[in-house]
Length: 136
Image 1 (cartoon, rainbow, N blue to C red):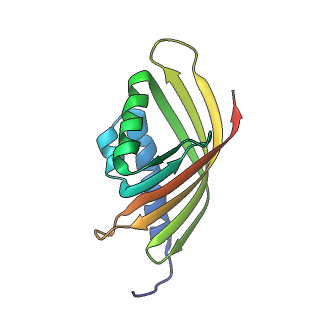
Image 2: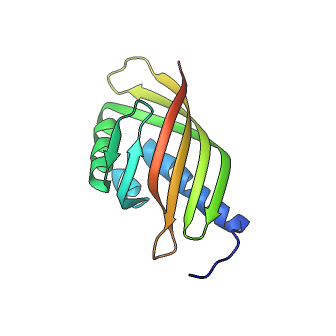
């Protein structure tokens, strides 16, 4: 494998995955989410609940999208790229609005995401973990 230094374009490409992810979540687009993850993705939620595999993550998202609207905003703290792997650390503001008309809830969390460069050259999410800092 050829080693090269990460460029600003590499960092931007990794961060664009997070932005496309939140956009897909806001639209409730499970298929778009699926295109942004590896087959063996592992997601650890702030409450410790863990999902393994693309099918499980997509099914969980579909279930969530039926019951609520999710809006997220990301502030990136750090992106490190090492070969075909990238590590991204960010702060995420999330608003969950139930479709039944009950009150929206706001969360502030920290996330750590590990991305892998696919054979196509695109970055995809391989592992993700979030820790809720504050809930309102």
